[in-house]
Length: 448
Ligand SMILES: Nc1ncnc2c1ncn2[C@@H]1O[C@H](COP(=O)(O)OP(=O)(O)OP(=O)(O)O)[C@@H](O)[C@H]1O
Image (cartoon, rainbow, N blue to C red; front, side, top):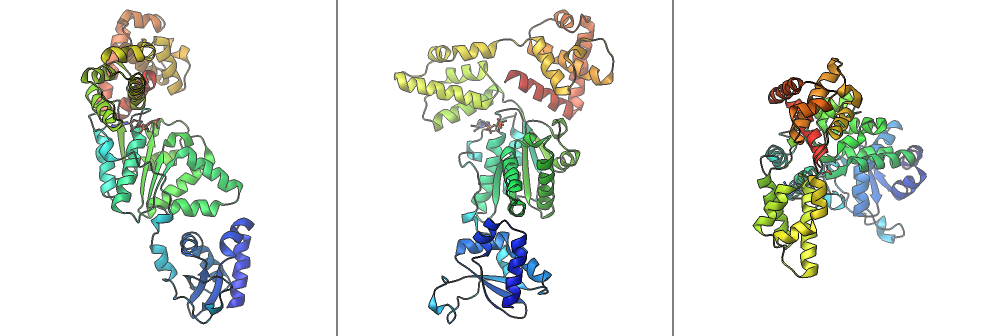
């Protein structure tokens, strides 16, 4: 059996980089074997966990290829190599490999979660209550209720916060679970590195051994062929093993350009929940909560002023609050409405500047991948009519221009054409959930 072990080592060596082999496999010592078990010694507990999670299957596979079929690897923590009593007093063997595989050792598993983002600090309002409720349901019963959970919404509206809150709540209740948060760009970078250094097995083992995988801003992997493929396989492996997957994006799956069809359809298997721009009451509640957290005294009228006059991006709103807090502290003056107006005046002027129809047309044209000129043209092609009507609708909603003035900016169209377009979009939005999502996303882009 000793010889067989040496051969198995050679076998494993072929499939690993020299560095990995010498780090993880070389220090493993063969102890003994009986009819169905191979006892291997590793230097310490951390090592044992790592080998168990990443290499036991590979070792069993190598033994099986060499004829030792159905042998089970049993890992034990051994004494240092020069220890004299090693042979006489072997450590009691650790649990059988398959049992070990079932155990989880979270203390060595980095979750990447942001501990600040918890449900308690998330303000729920009409704009986000659906996503909030879905996130809580997933946190309470991972992989049983909604899988995958897909949360989408505009920039700075709380997606990252919610997804981390899910992870933190799950870990609090189940400290043994492997919960991992990844921004999709980080997933991609790790994949690139694994490809470059021939560490794909490790990469796959790592992602496929999660109990809960949280992927933020998945839109960034769109158009990246290799990343999408690897994510697709990770998704399948986890889904089939009944593990929870949560994905966020700035858009509804159908509206993510360059997203592979097979991924899009999988994202639609579970629950899709949107986060909309917060209303004034929610913004005020968020500001009050954040002020309290940061020990900033924020008078009612200033909270109202901020919520009413600026952005719907909560991150930006938070930034204004911090700025006011810093100013108050540096000048040793309390925050007042007058002071808020003065300190934020430049930003607010820019923010309150009215959008132009050209900006709206440009954004809509880019979203639908058509030419801006087509929005102003009389062409009746189906692919142009809907974007044009959406642009007209947004022009009416986001500017103060009259119907004839809008018609003028759409290539001299009659005001009745504009009224018809607005009525149609209004009606379609009531029935068509996806159209509503597209319009919300465009509004968000235009007003952030
Ligand atoms: N409902 C909320 N209650 C409390 N804080 C919120 C809420 N929504 C957003 N925030 C805060 O706003 C900031 C931005 O939120 P977050 O990063 O989660 O947004 P996001 O939607 O992931 O943005 P991006 O699209 O840029 O990834 C965070 O500090 C977060 O705590």
